[in-house]
Length: 150
Image 1 (cartoon, rainbow, N blue to C red):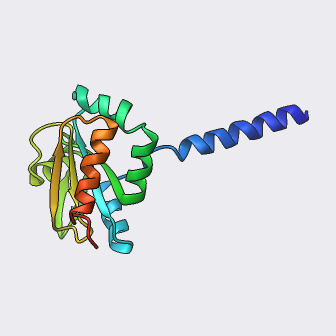
Image 2: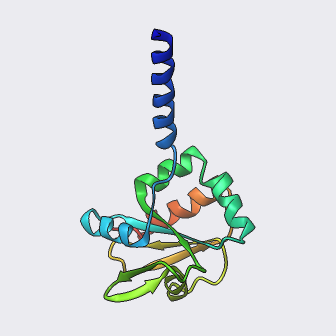
């Protein structure tokens, strides 16, 4: 009986540890509210369901431990489907769908990573698939160059 309890406990701990090794994806409005309460940049992953490079990014880059840690530490991360016209939310007094917000952010290719500063005014984009080291380098340059200055 003790062995079963110990094995069960190990499995629970392993699941919890694994859950901590993921990017904490939020909805856009949740990230905005979080940033207003505790200022941090937003990283918006704009994707489509048919985008092969988006899936490759999810599978290879967003599972890299260094990428996960950097994004969770530096950003409020958002997944936004550029073709979703169903889910609605409000931002700065206007109603948006994910598709409308992606268009407003002038996203024209996928995957595209929109970085929004803590004031929710200044944005920049990192378009295209990137391997973990490339992605971290691009994000780090933005952070160091002040897009994320508080």
